[in-house]
Image (cartoon, rainbow, N blue to C red; front, side):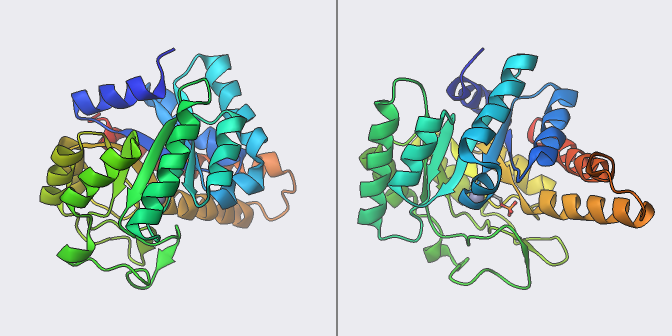
Length: 288
Ligand code: G3H
Ligand code: ZN
């Protein structure tokens, strides 16, 4: 089986992107996996610190590996937004394929220092683990928003500066970079987020020469996704839209079957709802 690094490179060459979908449980995992399988595309499962604490760090690693092994399928596991070196070390030791050290809220120097420490640990661990760094704060929660997240500014000088990004990549040696290019974590009520700054995506990509990861994908338009992917984005993250779909699928199933008490029956609606959203996004990211 090819490695995640190879799939990411291939995506960049083909000008498509790998879908990264966050899960909180096995229903989410099956929904995403079946979506990827239906389209025969590689996929990344993401778990934030909270999501992986809920499932269990070794448990989620075992679950994703079991799908990869049983189906001989390119499904990978990423430790999403990780805020300390200790937690990065924990997931590398647990067998994750990639990890994001999120120092977007730290000073540049502190962000470089800890990101570099994570890269050094990953390189020395004896297998391929990709490390992603973050530059530019885009908010922290995958939820429905009534406005732009606190602390996020979308003016030109608050987005990621290509010159600073280049310096960050050179100093840390990261494999992938998550920039702030008008994207926000979470989704505005109504489902339409601000437009992405596509010329900036291009400038950053040309400056750093490593794949870019677009976070905060919920609420962005098909047109913006395609333009971002054509200009250097190789992975796109979606979470809020999956959470909304899961909840709606579950509520609908409970309302329609008020006497049903078997979780494996009333949770089918949630799995299907997650699968439907993931299929829609994967078609856009893979030009299908
Ligand atoms: O890392 C997670 C993603 O960036 C999700 O963002 O909830 O806006 O889709 P989202
Ligand atoms: Zn994110």
